[in-house]
Image 1: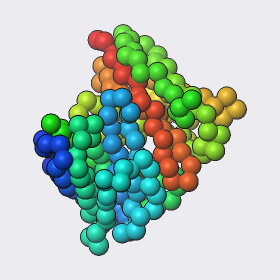
Image 2: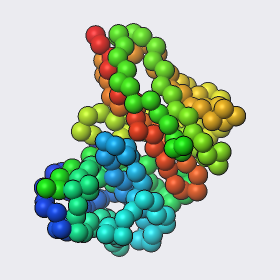
Image 3: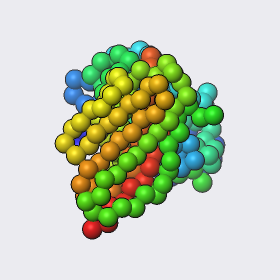
Length: 114
Length: 109
């Protein structure tokens, strides 16, 4: 158990809908990272927040947004969902916001868009 | 050319075998290199982390980085059935971590 929690574990929704995924980092960690994992693309970095502020952006679609709250938990919002958004979404956390931080991954949220 | 290439396998070996997992990369700016292990339906967990060219050993695991060839390897000695998982290489610079697609390993008793 990494200490990172993610809810919900599974989510089934329809195209065009909006969902929110939640992540609580390990105690003491200030950084939260979001990743998408699909069979064809592998694990893709989406976005990184450090202490409430956006630190880096990866391959995140405009339909997706995230934020990190004062209590350091983070939410990833996915809107206008498409079939291709079906994937595993992982959150990871690290102590600092530096370049080479060790990231600890949560168990993931499995999203299925029908 | 993709930034990080990793043979997806699957790779099946008998218990006790030495396993070699490899990744190649194209971006010479990558400064740090990692190996993650991911069990089915779980999140990735960090196995090894190296900054420079050379070898790093941790128990049965050895990570090797050759920056001149843009090639990294993970060796698993005396492989066990519990090592059956998908192994992901990852590398990065300036906060951006790029993952390989993973190699699925199965160690048969």
